[in-house]
Each structure stands twice: as C-alpha cells, then as structure tokens.
Image 1 (cartoon, helix red, strand yellow):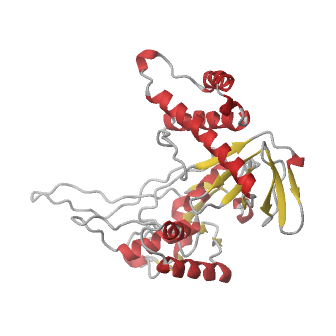
Image 2: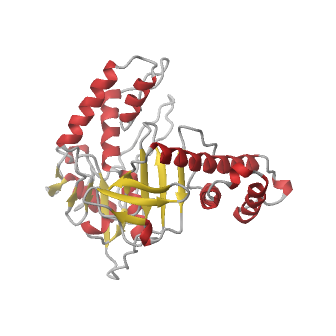
Image 3: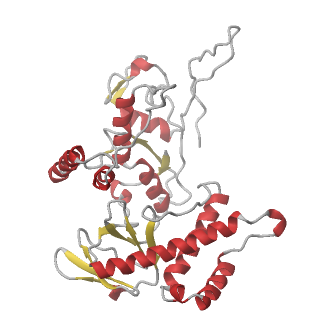
Amino acid sequence: MACPELSASDVNVACAPRYRLSPTFEQEVGLLEHCAQARFVWNLAVEQHSWWRPERGAAPGYVEQARQLTEARAQFAWLRAGSVTVQQQALRDFAQAMRNFFGGTHRRPTWRKASRHEGFRQVAVKPEHIQRLNRRWGRVWVSKVGWVRFRWTRAVPNAVKSYRITRDRADRWHVAFAVVPTPIPAPGNNKVVGVDRGVVVSAALSTGELLSVPGLTPGEKQRLGRVRRALARRKRGSNRRGRAKRAIRGMTLSAKGTVDNPGRGVRQKAGLNRGILANGWGMLVARLEHKAPGRVEKVKAAYTSQQCSACGHIAPENRKSQAVFQCVACGFACHADVNAAKNIAAGRAVTARGALQPLGRAANREPQLAALAL
C-alpha cells in the first residue's frame, strides 16, 4: 500500500471511539425497543427492494421511503411511540448500504436478525448531550430513554454529531461517538511512502519507521484466561457456553476445510489470522483513506519481501529471517519489512506467471522486475 508522506501520529485517527454502556433494566428495555424498531424499518426496506424489478422503474430511495414511514407512523401507534430519528436513520443507513452495493465495495444489504443485529443510530447530538460525571463515568442522552451512563475510558472527541448504540452477542452495550476526521493536506513534495503491513511489525514505512499495535495488557491476558477456563466448564449446547464462546470470538476460524478436503497448516493459519485481526490491517487502510482521501494506492505485495529495493534482484535467499534482509547479489541489507515497504513505494509489484505444459502442468517462471508505478 502506497500513500503520501504521513507521520506516525497521522495514523491515530479518532473516527468512532467505542465506550461501554451501563444501562439500568428500565433503560435496557427502551434501548431494545429502539433496536427492534430500527431493525423492523431496515427489514421492510430490504423486503421492498427485493420485490423490485427493472421494468418497474427506479426503486424507492430514501425520500420516498421516509414519506412512507410517515404514513406508517400515522397508522400504527406502536411505531409512532418510537423515535422518528432512530427509524429515519435506519432508512439512511439502508440507502448508504445500497449505494455501497452499487458502487461495488460491499455486498447487497440483507436481513437483520434479533439478538444478532442489535443497534441504532442517533443524530443531531449536541455538546450538552454528553456529560462527564467523574474520572471513570460519563453519561449520554438517548431519546425516549434518558441519561445512560457509560465508562469514560478515554477522552470523548470534540464536535460529536452522532453516535451509534449496539449490543453484542454477550449482551454488552456500547456507544460509539462518530467524528469526521480532518483531512491531512497534501504535502506538495511529490513524495510517496510505502506501508508494509505485517504481524510482528504492524506497519513498516519505507522511511524506516516501524509501527506496532500494543498487545494484550496483563489484565487482558488474565481475563482471556478466565474466559477460556469458564468455557471449558460450560455444558455443551447451553446458553452460558454460547456466551462464553462469543467472549473469545476474536479468534478467526479459517483453513479448516472439510472432511473431504481438509485444510493445511490449520494451526499456523489460525495464529496468522489472530495476528492480522490484532494488528487491524483493514482498519489501517480505512483510516489512511479517511485522512488522505484519493491519495492512497493499494499495491500488490507479491514478492516485495524477496526483492532487493537497491538493485531489484529477486530471490527467496534474500530474506534471511523475519526481520533480516540481505541481497545475495549486491549485499544490500536492512530490515526486511522496510525493504518491502520501499518496493511498495516504488510500485514494484510482480507476480509469477504460469503456462500450460504438454503434460498439463503449469510451470512458474522467475518473476521479473515490473515497471515503476507512478
């Protein structure tokens, strides 16, 4: 991934910090009603678009659906008793999801299910709607629910205009305050910085900087151990075991394959997936694109770890270890991830090419240096 020159501090973007909510029983009932109504409106929009056909003309957009929502609220008292803002924002979220689908960046929006997709969005948030009570606690105003306390684990960003409240599968409530990050102006020096994402080193820059995401704290490691021990004691098929499993859902399941086609390197792949999730590869790209819109270019990283950024020679022997790179042709040596980042900054992405042979096999030829991508 190549992007304009950024400093390490530019990557720390405050977009949607999440805080743990602590509602009372009565407040939780109100929050669940908001979630149910937002999910109901969303599912109605999904059903409406599923019946639409090209010969019928354009499908109804947000304006038309908002008008239909007004008519439905006038007809049904239970819907009218809910927050119109929550219901309208569900339609806005659906409209955005459809734009993402037609733009080719996301899949088509589907049904939302109870106990799995619990959440709603609130807009028109004013500064007085978020208050700090003491060092550890704050409160946020929720329409038709009142003041709901949340853990003040970090500073709340300024200029909060909206927030989203969600409940996870372990029945924990969270609030995420949405903030539009300030774009970084282009430096105007025509310099490009390559970013090589990794597991041991979260992000290596072609400038030589090595950035790492902090791992689990001692307290988090203890909690993870307790959750795993609790999972081992739970009865299979019980609700309590289901909640314990959801508490360690962060471990990605992959590479297992099937009985007929079992996977290879399952344990190694599972460890790699955990590392990828912990380092937030996708979130890093999203934050860079937020801060530098239109100036981030994704570059295929094939063979960039084996290619010398000084002379261009490609050989597996160049990569001495995870951290050491030394070219067998010219002797150039540096950190392996920094060398890959330099190749990415130069646009040196190459792939092996295959060709059908007489016996039906494909033989890969040695990859060659590609032209620089400007």
